[in-house]
Every structure is written in structure tokens, then in C-alpha cells.
Image (cartoon, rainbow, N blue to C red; front, top):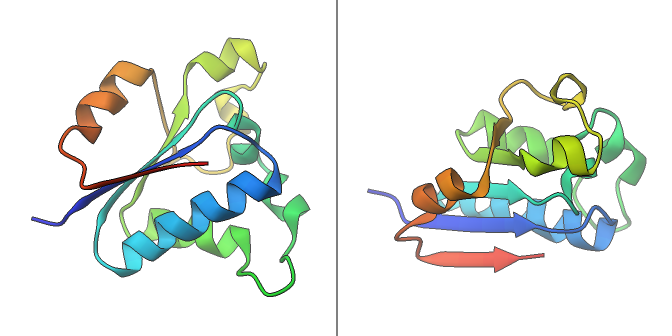
Length: 120
């Protein structure tokens, strides 16, 4: 069984989104079972077009490619359900249908036994 890695993103600024995506995609490359959680503070990053606004920062990978790699390689990306009301983000505006919308308790249950946790 693969080691479990948790990455939490609590801010939608580039300085939080990029390391969250880089750590998660790196975990995928190392064959970890990666679970990402975007808190309401970071939820805007999962809206269509937001990662494109970041562009490709100098010397960094492209955030859209990182995001796609995580999902294509069976990583789990969770959008906190509280952001629907708190941030006014509708699920039909999320950038990918594979994003899971759930509350914190189910995510915490899935995170149980994680070997690594990173928060940005």
C-alpha cells in the first residue's frame, strides 16, 4: 500500500497554490496516495480560469499541468463544501468534474494514517 500524503491549501494566492500543487504532484511522482483539501480560503483557485491567471511563474512548472497531473494520476482534490456559501462558488464553476466536494469530517477520515501532511 502506498504512503498517504495530505496537502491542504488555505489561501488562493500564488504563494500558497503553487507549493501546494508542487508538493502534491511531487507526491504523485513518488507514488504516494495524495489527498488535497482546498479550504474556503484557497477554494477560489479551483474555479475555472483561476490557475490560468497564475500563468507559469519564472522557474516554476505550469499550475494547470500540475493540477491535471494530480487528477490524471489518481490524486484526490477536495473542494470544501463550506466554500459554496462562504465564498459564493458554485460547483458548476469548478475547473474539473473530478474535484470532490465534501465537508471536513469525511476528508479527515480519509486522511487518517497519513505519513505526511503539508499546509499552505
